[in-house]
Amino acid sequence: MSGAGSGGEDANAFFLPDFCERWNLLLVLLIAELLAIVLALAQPGQWLERLRFLAVDSLFVQWVALTDAALLCSCRAWFVRLGNRNAAIVMFALLQVVTLCFTLLAFALLDMLALSLTLPPGWLVDRLIVNTLISVAVTAVALRYFYVQHQWKLNVEAEARSRVAELQARIRPHFLFNSMNTIASLARSDPLKTEQAVEDLAEVFRATLAKRDRLTLAEELELARSYLRIEALRLGARLQVEWHLDPGIEQIAVPALTLQPLVENAVYHGIESLPDGGVISIAARRDGDRVVIDIANPVSTTGINARRTGNRLALANIEQRLQLMFGRNDILRAFETGDRFEVQLRLPLSSPPAGETMR
Image (cartoon, rainbow, N blue to C red; front, side):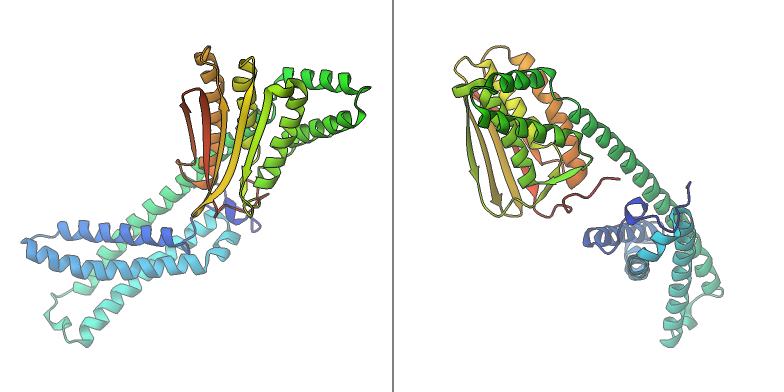
């Protein structure tokens, strides 16, 4: 395990998960029970005897696991300040002390109940050695696993940041040239539309150059509106947009540049390929503990392979970033029904705060 962090290293750079969270606590208990089952199966004798061992070992292992999780939860802030390397050493030692204390406590309870008289000679020493060796092995494997998982997550986040940079740089040159030509053509005939177009273009490029990894849904929707207003000046009546937005969902956090590329795809692969254009439908609604966003557009029945390739490049980029942010793989769905192509986002309401930066 390399690299001790400084005292100012924050929680996002800490390799250990937060054991105060219910899911992590449940995982610890499940792993502890699996360990108890393995230990019981390794015991000699009949199945009834093994079940007796399982009952005793489960009680012991679960209490040790709960105490370990409580320590890691309550002392997490202190461990973070120690840095990864020092924290790992301290945690390793603390968890062995917990195992030793519970072994001695178990012997004290047996002695109190006068059951220690039935134990073979040297039982306490043998239990101390065996339990310590098991604890050392399990703790070492667990810490190594958490460290490797943390490094993998950092690598995925670095790749996601590079994909954001790629997405920010991918505004097609023809969009800029077309926008500037549109603005130039409006400069004399309609100054008000020219001013609005310049502001919208500035908003789009401000978003592509910003360093924020996350925006609110309201900011994403406004960016999509700016982009569509610019394209509407060029495409005219060929581009129509329908909005269906439920109130009260605008402040959830989404990865930056999530909606605008999808809307851009709807224009580029849908509306532009149709001589008569069509309607892009953008809807956002609350569905239980999620916000569902649907973006649908008409598609041409010709040139499907080329259109699909372009769509999938942007979709794969966005899907990976959504999986990283929310830790789920059921966020984005894309499907075609007849002559319409639809992308659906199902964003959990319990998202991280907007503006928080992936590290």
